[in-house]
Figure (tube, rainbow, N blue to C red):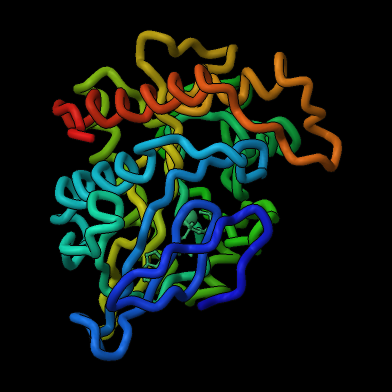
Length: 304
Ligand code: ATP
Ligand code: MG
């Protein structure tokens, strides 16, 4: 099994699979010899119930979060399949991780986080305030927190090591990283995916302020959509009725966690201590928010 990372619990042993790596949220496995997928070019991607905030993996999991991330990704991959093929192969996974794991085609991932923004907030707003651009794209004067952009923009980021911040980069930098054709393909695909997703979400009263896709190429060299798709972890979802330019819109999912960490918990965000465990009511309210995001977007409650 792969070496463990501080703060990340050991990935469960799964029959037919070998643990390969773990990120902040997902454990990734490769087929084991003698298992049902032996010698096939697939990965098992397991979404844990881990939650991160302020660049820390919290000690307290959110029950059913992994199931929500997986089911929502599966739902979106289907909505978006005519724009770009999906990496999903099968949901027939070991019983121990049923509902929160996908068997996926193994892709050569582009080393670029493909971010689309329709609204200005977070690192985009910070860069705009400093330079009047985001990822080198000039924007009109007078925009503020949560402003809607004149049109959605592609704001790529270079994938950072675990614990480091992803770094916003210019389109030119993406061209240098992957070549001009792949760069244009990533940009156009990202914007097409965002446009479709924003339209679907808007019908359900949700603004997709921004979102991150990860794309890669399959064995035939085709561009394929990988990783998680349009989940609360990879996107900023805002209730449309709460949106007002000039002030931050509460994020759909991590609001209670962030509020508690920065007020009642007594934790020093700027210090080097890990955040304390979450109280049960913060866990329960956060869990409800993840389930609510799923229900609002898909129109169906997730059976958990
Ligand atoms: P974080 O999301 O916390 O920044 P991370 O992205 O490194 O960290 P996870 O999201 O927890 O980690 O793990 C998922 C990993 O699997 C990512 O590195 C992602 O790029 C990779 N991945 C997802 N789908 C595929 C695929 N089809 N083929 C190859 N790699 C994939
Ligand atoms: Mg990830």
